[in-house]
Amino acid sequence: MSFLKRFAITAAVVVLATGAAGAQDMKKVKIGTEGAYPPFNYIDSNGELKGFDIDIAKALCTAMKADCEFVTQDWDGIIPALQAGKFDAIIASMSITEERMKQVDFTNKYYNTPPAIAVAKDSTLAGATPADLKGVTLGAQASTTHGNFAEAKYGESEIKLYPTAEEYKLDLVNGRLDAVMDDSVVLGEWLKTPEGACCKLLGTLTPDPAIHGPGAGIAIRQGDTELKEMFNTAIDAIRADGTYQKINAEYFDFDVYGG
Amino acid sequence: MTMTSTLPPPAPPRRWTPARIAGHVFLAFWILLGLGITLGMAAGWDSSFLSTYGPRLLSGLGITLWLVFWSLLIGGLLSLPIAAGRLSNNRIFSSLAFAWVYFFRGTPLLAQAFLFYYGIGTFSPELEAIGLWWIFEEGLYAAVFIFSLNTSAYQAEILSGALRNVPRSQREACAALSLPRSITFLKVILPQAMIVALRPYGNEIILMIKGSAIASIITVLDLMGETRRAFSRTFDFEAYLWAAVLYLVMVEVIRRLWDMFEGRLTRHLVRRSDD
Image (cartoon, rainbow over the protein chains, first blue to last red):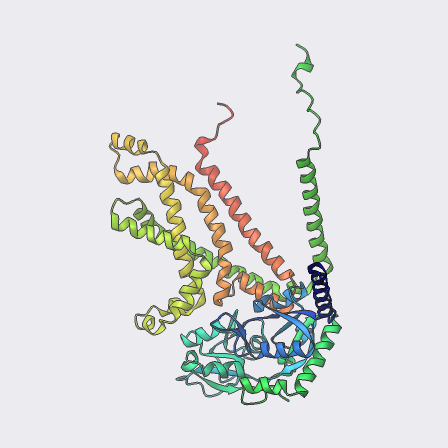
């Protein structure tokens, strides 16, 4: 066999192989996330995206045989960025709410945890009801269900809204805030860290369905039903085959999927 | 002499050079873009937006004006010793002033806001002990504090630059007339320096108005804070449009005021018609 012939055959094999791989047609999905909401999504000390949302997203992508790529985006602009096509889906612990449904479509929920309030360890506050927190400075993240809930139900408190969860945590530590409101898991996990040693959980709140919605879902552009169905099927699949439970166990000692 | 000789010669025909064609294409592009945005806004216009969020945007405007006013005033007072330091022959005094200006001009206002709000927040027990925590506890006061320091550096540079601009001979002439130093400064040097400093001062006010939007990230509900809040509720870009209009109005008012000030300060330089 001449060198030229061997070369031609090798080349043909390579072309066929790559063609076959290409023929599998991996759907490319760009996923937007915030990267500032531990333990759900955050950037670790190595600069890598980590968290429950990220692991669930990766599992969903494997289940629907999609090639996924992550994009981090400030919370404030995450819905407009989805609408502008910067990415195809938001997997960032976004609660499914009426207000957001006017802008984007949601898949079914992939977890649901109640809100809670945290205070300094030496706080004299006894309860977490609006009456207990009258006149108290209460912090939450802006543009979130928690921020909206605080403004709607804790009108007697002084509400301060922050761009990310990191900032209200800083202000609770340094005493600018008397209390903060967020997801019970987010607060609970933070209280276990050295930075959260200052503080304790005051109480878990009953979610308001009109404000908090049924839980966190994946947001996609309106009318993108194909992707929505793919995600819904994938959520069911990872719930059925135990992948979800495995990821759940890595992060939490209870079932975050909720009732 | 005939009448025709006084007429200007006919303009040469303007040729369609590539640059002229490109200019028209770009202009058409911008006009279309402007129309598109206007139509897009008109199509999605929600008249209930203003009735719901209008009062809050106006209250935000009030906060912005309050913030800018106090920052400029305190910054202006702070800038006097710093400008004096920049012009001083005393090495310690002048290098301190230089370092101050170097730091505040050389770092982003956003970074300064984070540093002085969240950074200083970690020293809250110490600050509480010396009774200064109240400045940093409230986002609004912290914003005035940060903006004052920032603008003092810029204002000091404007002032010292303008004073340096006045020719030495003016001082020498005053000395020859044995005018007291205070009169020399107030009546001769400063008025001339103000002509040079006026425009940069106007620019600094405009920069401060726009820069004050940074207060919204340290929990102050200024115009930008209210705008972001309204946007997060409605996802309607109308919010940012109204914010842009309000900022433009503020800047336009300053611009007009400054034209008036300049007319007044340079009235001796205007050629009168009967000259």
